[in-house]
Image (cartoon, rainbow, N blue to C red; front, side):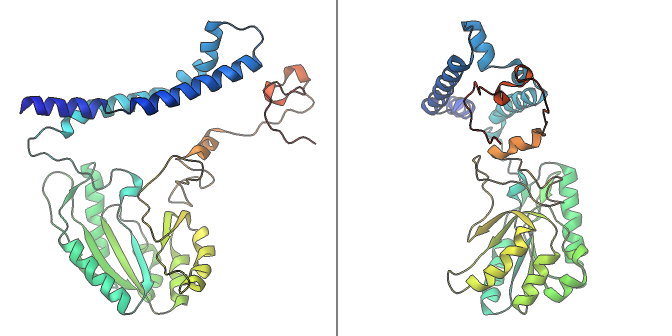
Length: 317
């Protein structure tokens, strides 16, 4: 028994795909070597490693924070495997792990069926554990405020849960008329496993509710290709101003680190909607433009010199 637990802990700590890691590091080494060989005149092994691992990056506070996060995460991993009845399940681990906050749809039989099934699922949902007691308290107060609103019909609550930071799932419903009468109250975020269904009597009400929403990280269109194209086409220009990522027939819990991802959005989703906190475009958060006017060529950064020693694509006039 103890041996199995030990092996699980070791696997959890060191479960790394060494082949993939080796390919990534090997590719980075080869690329760095090519760039170094093309751009540096007086070459040496020490200078190459200084070039490949710049002290400005390795010793930057953000690098130290990343290292501390990695070490802390690895040290905490064994506790996730101790068979003492303590299963750590977080209701809000990342910003994208919260439940859908608003479900906005056209009133009718289809929405009725969805709400019925959703209420059954929420009612049977076990309690989760939130990250901190203060987050759990804010969530509980937000759900109580939402479910106590005069224009809201509470539909279901999950298991209550125990412990210092329990999360009891919640589902409620309202009408577009009630939502538009109090967008600040019914449009305020409840960060956790809670959702509010907004019943709309017409496409016009659907668009009006979308316009009344605050800035969001994501917005999802659940649609049938062809049949819902006209309605979706009318909503897209609104959602483009409300969210950083728009999906169709999906759920926005996955955040992939790639060129196309945007994990950001208009305030209050993020403080600066011009960038993203995940993906290659995230580097823009740490950049600012600098203009070099009439600076002698020899004093310019290599990327701006006339001979373009780094061979990078440039727009010149």
